[in-house]
Amino acid sequence: MSSGAFNNPTPQFGTAEYMGSPGSDHCQFCHQPIAGTYYRANDAMACPACAEKMRGELALDTHAAFMRALLYGAGAAIVGLILYATFAIVTGIIIGYVSLAVGWMVGKAMMKGSAGVGGRRYQIAAVLFTYVAVSMAAIPIWIHYAGQQKQTRQQQLAAEQRQLENEYGKRDSVSPRPDATPRQRRPRPAAAEALVKLALLGIASPLVEVWEGGPSFSWFIGIVILTVGIRIAWKLTAGKPLEIYGPFENSPALSPK
Picture 1 (tube, rainbow, N blue to C red):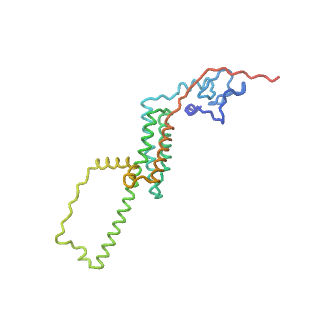
Picture 2 (cartoon, rainbow, N blue to C red):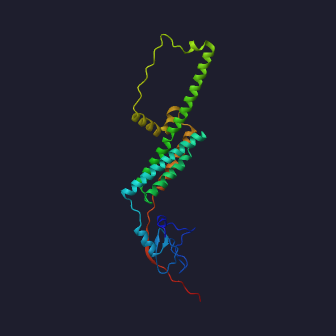
Picture 3 (cartoon, rainbow, N blue to C red):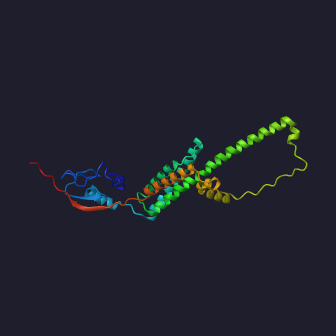
């Protein structure tokens, strides 16, 4: 019997069997008939052997489980960031619905890393991972479009240069003026400082549009979808405790008259 069955004690049937026919009940984990004593695991009928095994394999909220959940969640957030940015760059469409997938990926990854353990701190971490992944996706998108604009500007300058050469002659167009002085280059900020500023700008990206031109309908829809994605991650990492009740006595089958 696989241990995965104990992480999801929900019965694999359309409706839970609370009483069932006397003598015909079976364990909803190992699917063996139950005669006599049985237990309830979150309202699912379980045989004594499965109930005892579940008690021994209950996942505990330990520091190691939380650290694994953070590691898995961070990995899912990075993958979600790449997915969001790639979709926007390839299609040219910046659509907020990808944030729903990011929230689902983060929540599922954290629960896998913690072996099914959830709770408030897992939920807070999932919310932060989802928000940061979606907001930071704006950075590679900005870099992509900035590169396109720079290339277009360079092509325009080259075309203007060729036009001047054709009209006034190459020598006059490229020779510097006598009073021209070389421009002084501004000192570039340190790499660490630039990365910090870029990261802060990415985190604040949902507010940039409002700051520059005021709220718009598309911005409002994007915020609503992001909120739903965060809600998905929150609900997935809430965790559902496994509660085992019993023992109970199953009625023996009645022989037909």
